[in-house]
Image 1 (cartoon, each protein chain N blue to C red):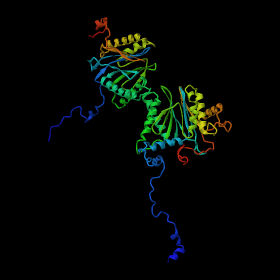
Image 2 (image 1 turned 135 degrees about the vertical axis):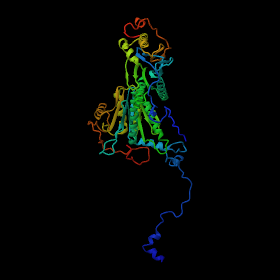
Image 3 (image 1 turned 90 degrees about the vertical axis):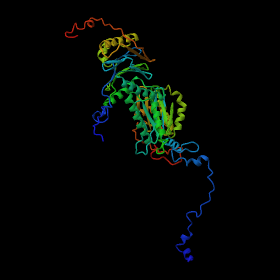
Image 4 (image 1 turned 45 degrees about the vertical axis):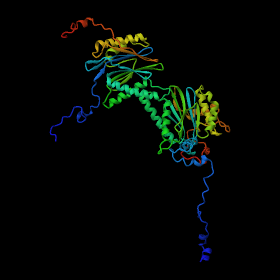
Length: 245
Length: 312
């Protein structure tokens, strides 16, 4: 007989912590994704950072992936949940291809499927901790939409996630117009990403820009933006703010 | 003693012929009929029993049920599909059975055979369409719905506790790739058609459609409806073509699936002067209740048993 009280380990399935089989907090996260519609399709940008809390731990995380023939998915938030979503979409596209008929799932269909998945998970109090951006072109029609972890979804001419909503969208509202050329679109995205790089603590200076057109998806090689740190406010940060250091 | 019995009332008992043979007749060998007829009844009890010739008779009998139902026709152009059916009512007192169902804005179906089975399958199709629409915000491609329907029918040909659906379906729908018309069999097969007719006396309609089908691809919507009415007239074989006798439905690019109302159909009949040979044009647009007295017996291919009440 054992008279010593046995100590339950914290992750056991008995007691009040037993339902920690559902998502409670994100662990490895990606930051903003920014996307806009241009003349030939969609342009999307995201950096390659995976933060572990406030540590910029992983610097080679690709947060944009092509889906099927017509779509491109970018995600911010929990990276493992993004990988799970990619698995779901893999199955979806596989079954779509197995029909082997003239029909294929376009960006609108994929976007709505993701909305259903995100919303259903939210209702079960077990969300996929991501904000997704879904862009694509099918039969000449451009499509750009977003879904959040609670299932809020909408379409627009330009979308962003996380900090991008606060820092990039205002720039896009001012500078975006219909039928941007590829070069102008890239310049605009870089402008947004530069601001995010300066002001978002979880952003790193290694990004990719992806483009999707009727022909298909191209994701650039990772590269860095030129930054300028000699602004007088940066050189002497305490100047304008009393008591700061 | 015997004399008494022979002449008395009990004589009947003595003299009555035996109702059964006293000794069974000797076996003269198997009946000398054709191989096919001889074995057909032995292998047709179960859908899961093959015949020696490699046939499933229950499935073939199910297809027979389709031939007994009243006619349904379909034809398509590049942009439109028209479905038509002959309205058959049990008696003058009753209304006719519904044989054309809207499945979604872009898909409709006309049935022939056991209408109860057809109704159940229509509900299945509507369910599939609405679920797909909800998940993908996009219409279900007809081709995929038809395959799902065919797979469902196939299951019933391979379970001993089920029976095949006794209904043939003409599925009309629009896709990314254009207008489509499919025919789904109780056997689980499906075929795509430019034009087709099923049900009783459908051969007459098919003959007409075979003559005209090459023009259908580029035909206008109204010409397509006119051809549908002409094809229906062929199946009526002399009976006057009135809007109360038939139902027409259309689906096309920019035109969701809908059944044309009787008034419109009658107008088209009058406009094209499509009437039976014997009588003049019937001008009144009737309500849906079957008014004509014709209760012609169905001339199907089965043995002359008459129409079962459930077969309309």
